[in-house]
Length: 273
Image 1: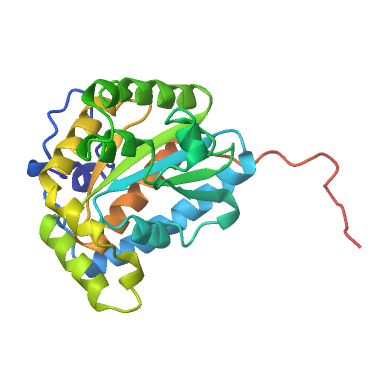
Image 2: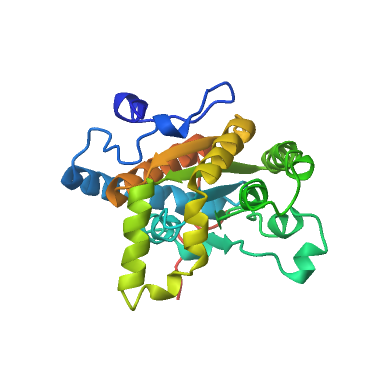
């Protein structure tokens, strides 16, 4: 299912006409890689990404928004730490979207998200995002279907507007298995330094696994577009996940093809004293 990664070294994006079924996507897929090779390849990919990001930051003529979604313990925080470790932090803006505040609830559901869309030259990372309003809102019944079902089109129009105004939108679903989630949640319970990440509500959400999987499937099917594609990344193995995400970033930055802006005239022969 992830064959194109190996065949042509370009990450396969989901298409709107794909019959996407998460049951067909193996979260533990190693993509034919071994761990040692993948870790070395990751370092090489990130060296390229870092160079491209420096040019991207300097050019300031487009923006890149990366949306990360996953089940609990799917690896969003770990992905951000690993993949963004080697880039210029001044050019990266990470935002998380949890339970809306009173002020946010007083506005439309996209209001709080739009305010954090990346500026030109910035890579914006959404750790959870506007998709919570067709995921948790749907699964937990916080709004009726007559409300959340309209939001797929809202989201597509919102992302189309961002794209038209110069923001490249990339959406990544970290596909983790139910068993791997159990292992990671148990690790959080057992490790005093990680226990702060765990809440009893995680167990309630885990009981709704199938409902969440259906909600993710429908969100991906209904909102993947040429301007804002979804990628389904096998996330049980961190070394696979990291390399795939690095390849996605490299692929999109190379498509943007950022260049350093031309230097001002009069620099030739200039001596700084």
